[in-house]
Length: 430
Image: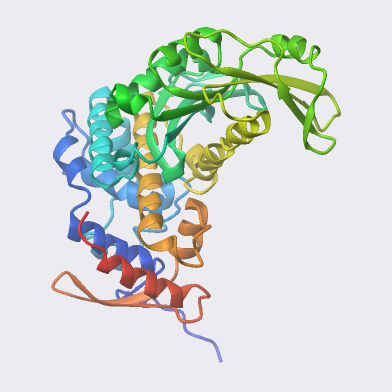
C-alpha cells in the first residue's frame, strides 16, 4: 500500500506550547506598551506597522531563531503562536530585514528608552534594597562578530579569535538578578579603558544612582578596565570596587617581593597581600595573585578592593564571582544566539542588541517569577528556550482568550511546565 501525503492546517497545535501561554500573558499585561508608545519610524519601510515587525523578530528570538531568515520556517509557519501574540500572521523575514535596515540612531534611542522603562517597571535591580546589601554590577567588553564591510567592523585579535572582523559590545549587568542594565555597541577599535566612564554614567542614569546608592554599589572589573586613572575616577564617585589592575608587568614585579603565598588552588593559584599597596583617593587594599597557565607559564595580577576587612583569599573569591557575569554573556551568545544575528548597518545591529537585552531580561524575570523554586532553577536562557518554550502543544482559544493549553504528555518537562504556567497566571500585576 502506498501511503498518502497531504497537508493539514493544524490550527490548534503548535511547536511552542509554553510560548503560546507567554504570548497571552504578555498581551494581558500589555508588556510591549513601552515600546509601542515610544518607537516610531520616520522613513519608508514598506511595512504598515514596522514596530510589529520588530515585535515579530523578538518573538523569533524567544523561539530560538538563529538568524532572521528562520522566522519563515519557525514562527511564521505556526498560526496558533501568531494568534497567541495578537498577530494574524508573523511578518515575512524579508520585511523584518527591511525594517531593521531602516533603523537609525533615532529608533535606537527610542528603543533604548523603552527598554529602560520596562526595566524600571519589571526589573529587580531597580528595586534593590541598598540598606540590606551591596548592589553588585559587572561591566564587561566582548567582541561581536561582523562582516568585513559592516559599519564599525575592524580586523583584529578579539579574545582568542585572531584576524576576525568584529565590533565591541559593552555589557552592564546586575548579575545577582540576571539582568542586563544596558548594552553599548562600539566600533571594533574601542578599548576597555575608553569604555568604562560612559558605561558607569549609563549605569547611574538607568538605575538613578545618587551618592548614597553609589556608596552601596560594588563594581567588578577585569584588567582591561583597571588603569589607575579609571579606578581613581570610580573611587572619586564613591563606588565600592573590586578590580584587576591593568599592568601585568607591575604585578609581576610586586609578586617577586612576596615572601609567603597562600595556596587557593593546589598547584595552580596562590594569593598574598601585596608588599606594595597602590595609592588611591580612598583607602584600598592591594592583593597579589599568581597562577600557572595550562602551558605551565606564570601569570601575575594585582586585585584592588575597597573592602579593607577582606582577607586575600576572600578578595580573590569576590573577584572570581565575576564569572557569573561572563557566563551571562556566554549564555546570550549561545542561548539567545547574539553572535549569529548580524547586520551591516550599525544602527540595525544596535537594534538587534537591544532586542536581545529585552529577551534576556524577560527570561530573567520569568525565572524569578516562576522557575526559581522548580527543577528548572539552574536553567539559563539557552535551556529555557530550547527545552521549555519549545514543548509542543494544543490550545483552545475563544474570543481571543486562552481557554486551555495542553502540552505534549510524553515530553519529560511537560507536567512540571503546566504547573509553572498555572503559577505564572496567579502572580499579581507588576
